[in-house]
Image 1 (cartoon, rainbow, N blue to C red):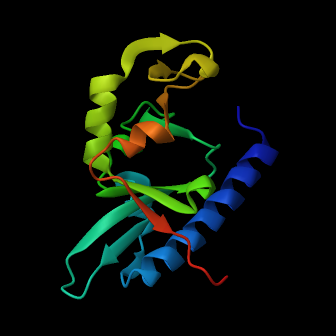
Image 2 (cartoon, rainbow, N blue to C red):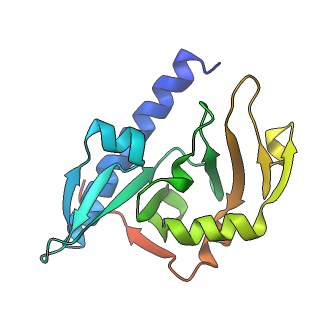
Length: 165
């Protein structure tokens, strides 16, 4: 069970990442619209982005990452498809060591995970690099990849933080 302190910390850092992301996206000239609660929960879309032609695409913003460490949710705690199988077009990881967001197409990350992550389920999360991990008394399946793995993806980009906070 997640502690109240950990949940509060995760929520606070996630909100900071979302504010940073909105500012970075707007600096790129994108129109940013907060998703509905339903889209957030069911589609794994935090924001809808659009350019002048109004073609929109979804983004799932991920905060609370440790340096060089990316946790990827394949199946959520309820046993349902995780955000890797959501409807977001891109995933934006808040990576301060990059000075911004490490952004990749979700389908490219999904393909990378399918090709590079073993189906072996580990009991200890420190052993979960490119292997599956399921937390005790949960139905989730997650894996750990590194920033250097994301950099191998053709769609990898860094969206720098907005300079003026």
